[in-house]
Length: 355
Ligand code: UD1
Image (cartoon, rainbow, N blue to C red):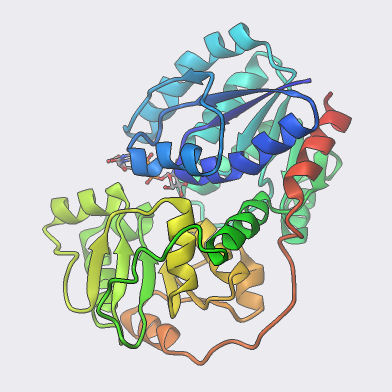
């Protein structure tokens, strides 16, 4: 069977890694298309290198732009790519503009579509990712869900028959990389910090926290007043928005560094006192590493992390301070994100349902 993966943004490269290995291990053909949504080497190339992902077979080079311009540039090129490779299935990942563009172009040309990480919902209709998720699930022929909660959302929307619970592929890659880090493969890149009482790892990049100057200023002020150093691994979006709004990111206890490669990120989180983020993936990675997480959002798709006490939603400065300094959560052996073999299950399901 010939499976085409379409990816374009950082979290998708992480999910692609275990899938790429599982497709080859199962003896199938894999075509990788990179839309070029993320093009900075630290957001793209290092993930292919460190996670052993084969070079893309096609690169669309779309780059940045408004949602319509970026999504449209992908759509305009996908027809030719699909016609050229003639895949038996187009696999799309997560919730970015690359996900939606690939799903729409494939269904229109009658190529079967499978959506990995289907069924996640924030129920916040202002989020671009929420539009992408809902539209992609409803376009897809096969919804590969990471959790029971995601399966329930799909059933509520009438998609139960085309949905299968396969587990979370980010767990697969996280466990492998964690073991490499613990074996000494990737030293903690933040070990040089002057932080005798430890540090927090932060990432902030979502539109809802960066587009509005007042909101970004409030988040920056909260982090700069933290009780220990906060290392903001600055996504290009937060740097660009801070400059546009005239906000200094490095202030008080807040220090910026460039984004990290995946093994170094895991080493940094493992060595930290906590994580502060608006990323989806990092909330879950913190939980899987049993590092307390504070999520600077009003809702989360990964509700299990909150229910188990390892993640707290915090928005105002007072809420963020209280969440950062809260007592350590009770330990748990709950495994809502699977056992690290989701990629094999996803590939087997694609072959069974579509192959
Ligand atoms: C995208 C996804 C988001 C995901 C995130 C992970 C959408 C709508 N959003 O957000 O779901 O969590 O990726 O990082 O698809 N930029 C660069 N270099 C790059 C990429 C982006 O400088 O390599 C800058 C550009 O100024 C661009 C901005 O970042 O305008 C935003 O990039 P974009 O692709 O629109 O979305 P992200 O914010 O990265």
